[in-house]
Image 1 (cartoon, rainbow, N blue to C red):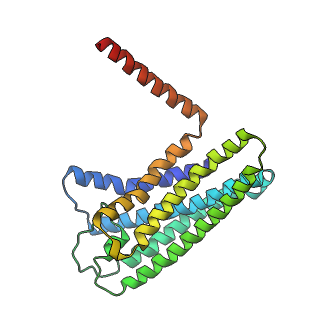
Image 2 (cartoon, one colour):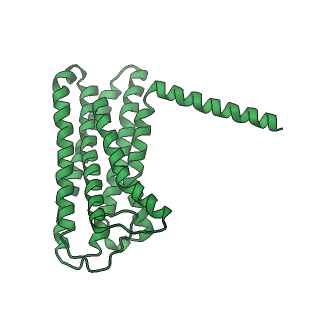
Image 3 (cartoon, rainbow, N blue to C red):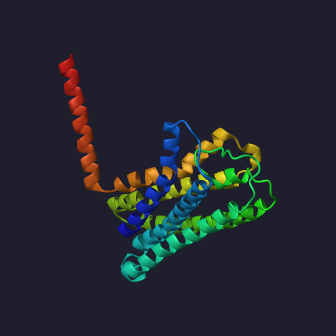
Length: 262
């Protein structure tokens, strides 16, 4: 689990570093400019990280399924070599997916201006600038990617159904609580990630608006990478104890300060 969490942390860091620093720089300098090559690089890196992260989340659901439903066979079914191979497959598949989409998108002629209606370069927004019917090819790739993502989501859902059945058979209430605390946050992040990304890429143009596109993009590009470390860190009892001491120390200092001021 911690090996996969290491990979997830690297992907989260890469994903959020691809979009936010440039957006913050543009806000500070009161500009919206980005070079063509910079936009292409941003599309590629963002797709690479989010695709690899989603495949890794699918692998992590399988890891949790084996750990809870088949604990005695966990070491043989998912050894260190298998973990490395699965993580490498997630990174490689994300790279291939990003390469195909980026190459196809930026091979289209863009003749409807050069303003992307988003805080980062995103394929649906770039396709709006195209005047070529070749964009249907990219739409086809998006549909294939969406079907693959849906298949992964079904696999995750099936894994968690089996996990839920196994957890409900645990006689100890503490054991059930520990299993639920491990699995439910992961499932919640996956659900948010899949639903917002699918809506952003597959929603019909008739319901598109700048404000809605911005909210949806923030939900799938910023919120999951920011929430993942918090969710998984809060499972660590030592970290929770340290956070509690920090909060109680802060509040006690605030109370003492108010008493002195009074």
